[in-house]
Image (cartoon, rainbow, N blue to C red):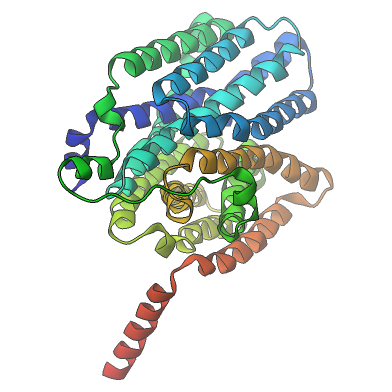
Amino acid sequence: MNYIQFIRRNKTMSFFGAMMTTLSSFGQTFLLSLYIPYLIEEFAITNSLISSLYGIATIASALILPKLGKYIDTVPLKNFTLMTTGIFLSALVFFSFSRSWWYLPIAFFGLRLAGQGLYSHIAITTMSRYFVENRGKAISIASLGHPLGQAILPALTLLVIAQIGWRESLWLNAALVGLIVTVFTIFAIKPKHLQTESEVKVENGGGVDRPATKVRQRDILRSKPFWLLAPNVFFVPFAITGLFFYQFSIIAYKGWGIEYIALGLTAYAIASTFSILTAGPLIDRFNAKTFFPFYLLPFLGALLVIYLVDSQWGIFLYMVLMGLSTGFGNATMAALQVEFFGQTYIGTVRSLFTSIMVLSSAVGPALYGVILDAGWGFDTVFISSMVILIIIIIQSFKAIPAYTISKWKYRFRHRKNIK
């Protein structure tokens, strides 16, 4: 089954997944950062203070997320989505009514929890749970919302802010999220859409997997698969957020033109979209474990480029390689969590990993900032990131099934004998 056939058969859930990840952009760093200059001017606060408030709010949301995210396993999807939307809207409206700096961490907390955390969590968990044979394609379609939001929403947000003001733009954001998600969730999603592919097989005379043993978060933390996946889950958002947070400083350091940033981000979104769409069918045909160590190789190439290349074209290769890695990685990591822990309690599993992702996005800018403030410079940032990444790639090979490695060895020896 190709993407067109899949979408035709699953229009509602495909739109739901992509809708949730796209609208999660209103709680993501790349969009919220557009409001920072206006907040600094409005409340006469410093860059260090607002970045600290943002970091504290992000860490707090990461700590709360596993407690809330696991309820998607027991609370009906429609109810869970609507309750999360209520938190999201409250945070947007509260943000718009900010009258002092102490409003900001409360607003940031709600936006990071509901937007970056729970909206993405709902989208990928839903696609992971209700699709089996086509899980890779389902996750890939939902993941497309991330590059779509990155490509479209920043320019639109800046235009709206310029026309009506930053406070009023938040009202518009709230109205957009509330109307689209509430109407679609209540009226479009039917009970037939919330059947897994294996349940459909049962109705058609096929088999079904046995119910999975209940998974507790304490058990996940003690398991080998968790410690195999956790470094990858942590590193990518850690590095991406840190590098994007200091992208203007990096551009100045490399001597590149600021006008190249927008073009570079577009290249990043296109590459990410391409790799997401490529990952889905490959995961369905083989499995995510096979690709686990390899999706980080383009990221390593991106770090090499930003470290070694001084020419203007370097920013495009840098962004493309990062986009390829993050796009393929998003689909691969989501599918791996199901392969390791099963789909029945995937909400409990994903909420824990999503918490790590949110936490790492707060640590990245802070740690890079410490390195820069110490006077070690961007070269140290790039080299240390590459060393950490190489270690993670090496340990990721433990995830590849033994029979797959045996096949590779057999093919290599067979080709060698032929020669």
